[in-house]
Length: 380
Image (cartoon, rainbow, N blue to C red; front, top):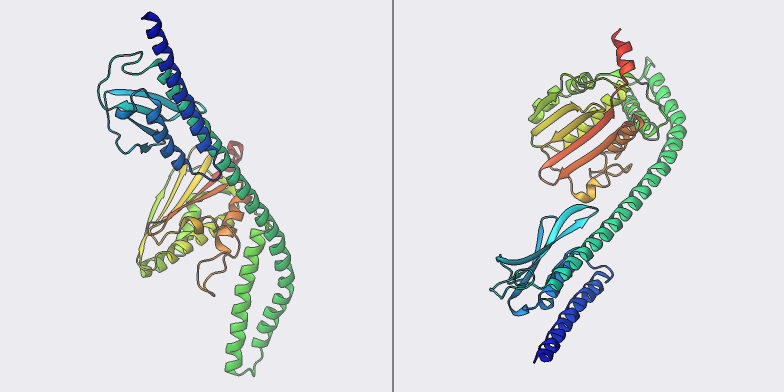
């Protein structure tokens, strides 16, 4: 009789072990499928867990990862639950949970077996490995994209500098001869009007060339101690009338204790002007424009936020690419934000854009605070 019980116990243990190994093997097969999404892996894993436990007819399961719940259709909270945490690089990311929907006899861990504890722990560890690999792949793709973007910017910078220098001389000649011809005393009014058009077009083209040179960093900044709040106020003074006409309410939230930065004030003003122009163009029916400055000890931050049309994620990822624009032909050069990016980078700063379609855009710029010695000397 005793041998029969031992045999029955051994057979039961083997059956449980087979179910555990089958569950882990099937998990590995799912995770190894090329192109499978994380969501599919988690959803299919919840289905694999149920038959691996001792009472599959009353078992259910769920996996919670980064706040997202992936549960079997019949899942509900139960006092008879077994759970294992999912930890990636020591950080808690979620958990795996198996429940019994009805009461069962007490075993090693409530109604659960010791082997089931080992299994749910192994499942959580395997999921952590999958999450880690998935994150590593995303990081690799992101890094590769950033490298391609940086290489493209560098190539375009060289091209832009060459084109700008080649255009400068003939453009200067066109502008000079147009201005000289305007001085002719017997010039008919229609001809004078045409020459003014040539002059204005040449000046506009020269501004574009300046932007190209700034983007290509061929015009080094003339850095000195600068007060970002003052630059913001000066830049906004250029748009006061336009904002009123456009029905745009301007809010200034400027930190009065902002430390100085080492920068070219003219270039920082150009950054603000470009960002404000973009914001106004994104609010054709009026809205709110907010400029905020803050300091965290090591850097000064400038936020320019609008309540305009916003951008899609695809557009947001391309705004720093020269000549990329969503505006109609003749309404934009696609150089505004690349120039902003070039100026900020030349000042050893960073720029980030947060945007959502229909809810506006926020641009966050961080620039390093000037060394304390420089600020002290300026104050003497």
